[in-house]
Length: 179
Image (cartoon, rainbow, N blue to C red; front, side, top):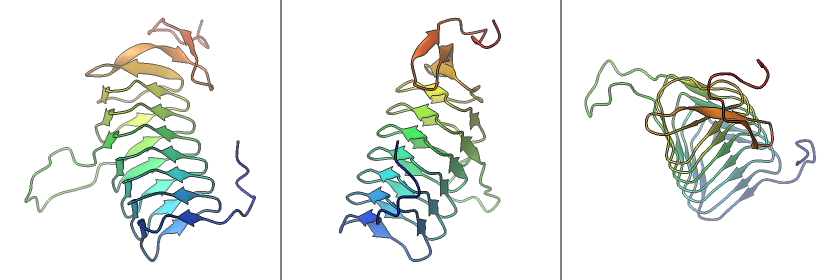
């Protein structure tokens, strides 16, 4: 695990755009064609992949890895050590319309150590618990408990994982901590 206090310089690929007013922590790497908007905050030791978009007022914790082609829109918070797989989608609007004067942002929080699989879609207004695991291609419409494994469309509980992401139970109803 990287040390978030190592003072390693930030790396920004020449094709990336980090707007004035964005804050990026030590040791973070921002790769090809990424766009980091003003007022966003990215912690130390992160890896921001190719073609990642981080909107204004987004908070990304320390040691987060966001794989290629992910858009993290306003209203999304990713806590420390979160993994976001390629092409995952975050929404921030329950009623998307081209013209909507009453538009409001609906927040989504992904807690420490959670993993979001490739091509997963997270519908706004949910919380993903600590160290939870969202399987690739899942559509998440409800909160996910800490250490819970969910998959499918819509995503349903399928078991429990440990902090390393290893499946420790296929009992979807009772976590190993409750048994």
